[in-house]
Image (cartoon, rainbow, N blue to C red; front, side, top):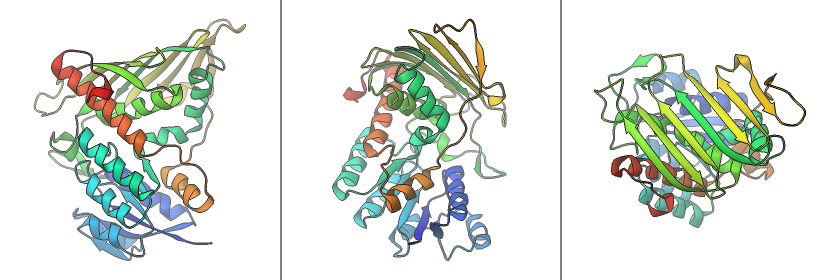
Amino acid sequence: MAIIGVGVAGFDHWYAAIGACEEAARDPRCRLVAAGDQHEQLPGFARERGVGFVSADPLEVVARPDVDLVVAAASSDRNPALVAEAAARGKPVISVKPMAVTVRAGEDLAAVVRRAGIPFFPLECQGRLQAGAQRIREWWGQGQRLGRPISALLVMRGSVPLTDWPGHAVPATWWLDPLRVPGGGWIDHAIYDVDFLRWALGSEVRQVVGQTSTLKHPELRVEDFGIGTLTFENGVIAAVEVTWHGTPGAGAGTRQFVGTAGQLIASLPRSQGWLVATEQGEQGWRQEEPPAGRTLALEHMLDHVLDGKALAAGADDGLANLRACVAFYRSAAEGRAVAPADV
């Protein structure tokens, strides 16, 4: 069996990068052969894992002949150059989210991927690989148990990202730099919700109404509060609220899905399971255990590269997610509804 050489290019998105390294160590089909970033912790981290090549320049990782698959986990502003280098060499890419800072840069990136024909998987789409998300898609998005989908409420409260490595606090990170990201607290987690809704419903966002503010952390140059109303082509309306108002280490959220024949509530922490109420002979709320299990992004890409299994998402999904998020910020700035197709 061929062993796939994995290179991690950039550790700005450190939890994705380190997570990919841990995935590679567990999967016998691949080997972590190269890692690139300027962070002072990287050489020691790589040495402990037996990584043969370490560079301060992530582009050198992408160019390595022993790197067959690239995990691009640099910041969003640096990502297009890494993807272009990988595309020029015909290498599959697992990409940071969001995949670019602007829609124009995202369009260029998607075009590069299409021309090269390389496999490309955006990290905000990894929710599609979770058994629980797949069940919700069946019950709600496909109307199997909850009836025709009509509305949703998704809330997530995280905390301001102030670490650039596990246990290494810094005054500011790239997530807080408006030159390096499309926005702050809202897009940080809302981009996952945007992708989930598009995928579960099989429908694109028609318009977005957004509101942002900096309520808890006035020193930030990006918002710590955002709430958006997304209207989909099929008529479903979803409210997505995401903030950096949570207590560090104690993120919380809820996902509530309403159909013509029932409701489902999935909350964080997950200890209470799901609450389900339907009109199919069940009275009141029922507590149910969500299905366990998920496929990780690297495993999913290896399944595609080695076994020909279809990828759950691609560059066009990353671009659609970015468009919807940029439409949210334009709406918040201009005080009007904005269509993603117009940004």
